[in-house]
Length: 451
Ligand code: NDP
Image (tube, rainbow, N blue to C red; front, side, top):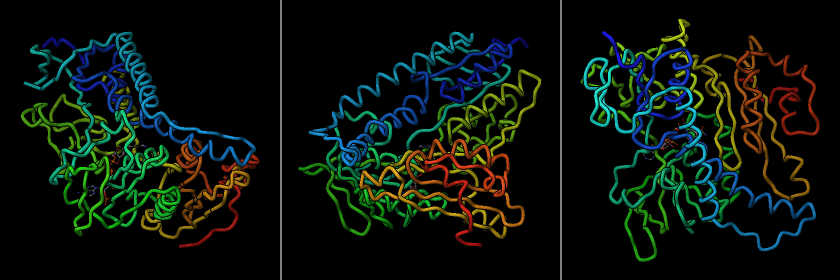
């Protein structure tokens, strides 16, 4: 059977665009469908605009710190509306670049919502198109708690577009998105209360780093209500009233729900096509990104594995190599570094101390907790935490973690060493770059503890 295309991709986010462009570069005839703007979560509603707001709000601390270095900083104040408008200009620019890149690579763009209607057949904007392979790269979206008044809350999409800075914000959840927005709103000057059902933020990360980050956020003025859950939200004269399950309540201007994201699988015709969803509602795929239906593949957040842009991109490019370059490529999901752009930020690669103790047996843990040199003059009390987790038997560094300024940048470089399974001895024989904070990673002599 002759198909209209070799590959039809549903969803023009980072993963779908990368897979499509790479497939076209391998000579495939490719089309992509998008029902919102080209660019996807990362570029338009996630990583990029979020990071611009982190940069924009963190100046508050830089300005305070400058005083200790002799600067007089008078009447500095943030125009939140101007920051959001500047952020919008940049995401518009990136959207344009994405669209141009797609057009330039020969990928046909179909605007509208695509649905799989038969084997190798997709319907989009009332037209049926056939393709040898279909790729689902539809990502995810914020999920709201099912509580009375949930519609009064904002999610991360709306939090990025607030035209005015709320004076008092409650943030529900303790994941990446929750801690990042707590940092943004707090640094911008809002009163922030973070409501977490566990005792600590960032479940799954290294426990010591979680505790350290939470303490540093608290020092900056974020109020944590731990072991707490939202019961209802009501509009009251002065704003919103958030009632918790224990009956207590707080009054705020905005409630932000950051209690997780859900894969975008509805209305795509997946189940009729024989695509199995897992318990969490994500598309089940094998290591080749193949679903249970022949000819249908899935990558990125819609598969809910490691929900990070560079992972979706790697999965997409690997799939393009497998299908169109005669180069079968499996995605290696091990040892993927990531960063949380909280204030201060957190960077991590490899195993937490807890995971290493469970998986590697005996572990040597090296830690450094110090006040960065910059704060000798700024007077800021903030401490940086660095941590190496070493498998005792092999002396391989199986995890590296950091909470403190520049952690994301530093962890990116360290990730190469951890991915390459270098040993503690390799770290020890690396000469420090002085004076930096990062040098502490090669200067940790004695284990802080052996487990
Ligand atoms: P996460 O899954 O990371 O966090 C969800 C949070 O909501 C957890 O703290 C969880 O609590 C809490 N929660 C879930 N259900 C409930 C409930 N019913 N009541 C109260 N609390 C609840 O989701 P995010 O939305 O923050 O992020 C989604 C994904 O997006 C991340 O996993 C990450 O992969 C990606 N991301 C990456 C970023 C980066 O790389 N910097 C930035 C933003 C997102 P508990 O811990 O108790 O389960």
